Length: 107
Image (tube, rainbow, N blue to C red; front, side, top):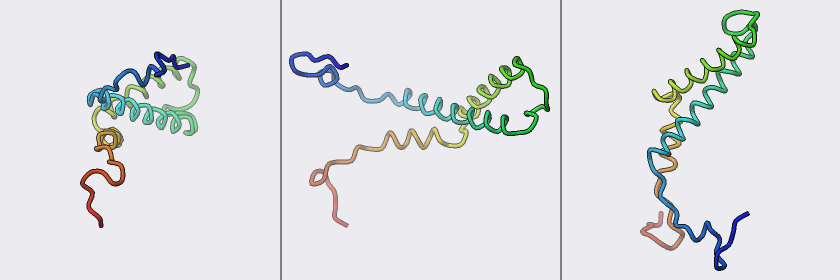
């Protein structure tokens, strides 16, 4: 629940800071790594017998999960699927001005 101070919510009372580009890029890379990790996990689970054949135990499953996460992170840091750059560029677009304001030219 948002507390109110002098009739204003705390969110309204605190000024919003502009997003730090480094934090935005890091969050986008983490998102892409998570997505890639889930894709790798789904492919491994759907493949009959796993990546390395059948008979995997719980320790092997944990090790393979950690390896997939690290591989996904490395892929994301090196460009991956390009999702990081798309998310960053989408978030860095200039804010649209409300209708009737700004220097919009009719088409």
